[in-house]
Length: 149
Image (cartoon, rainbow, N blue to C red):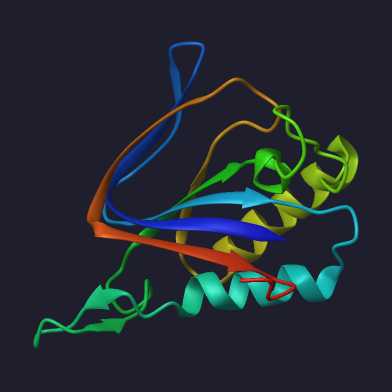
């Protein structure tokens, strides 16, 4: 799995002029699922996202996680995180999970994040979405469950 995690002061997702998810302070998580991902990858990604200590403490240091600050998640499915652009000009998405597996893992991620007590909003799987955000910092983290970066 891959994720782009952006610390935001606010973010929203709109599908066909309808807001499907909206948060204040927290993380916008663009989440991609790879065909070879397993439950271990899902568990790793969830632990990483919830455990990222990138919110500032009273001393101004990035030392607090999302639960410490009472933040929310806006999780948006993004298969294009597995776009391979090394050859030619058109990305290859061969390693991205198909829609069935992608939806299953995306929904499990959201469900397990909610079970942790975090408020979670979402985009709409396989929809054309418009994502708006105010990146706080800016702070943006790239996560890969296979630890490629």
